[in-house]
Image (cartoon, rainbow, N blue to C red; front, side, top):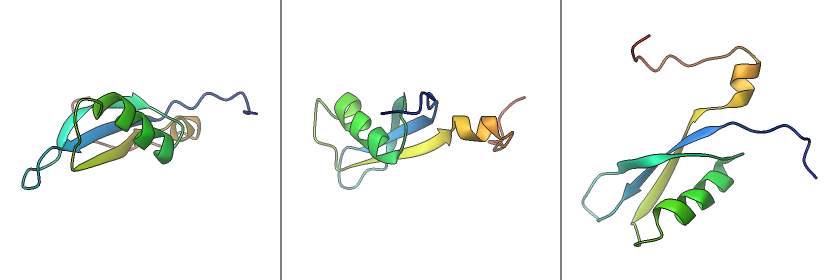
Length: 77
């Protein structure tokens, strides 16, 4: 059973298609944790092929917003 709190964590997804290529940003998704984010990335972004690797990187979490914490990503304000 869940606590009723909706987790609003935003994850960025990167795929590596070939051995000698870098990881490429393919999209974003929302998930409660890293395992859920990785599974969702596999389901959504790796359906049409078999990437060499998948990275999911946490960009934003609702817990940080609740506590007034933030990360300066250096973009425009």
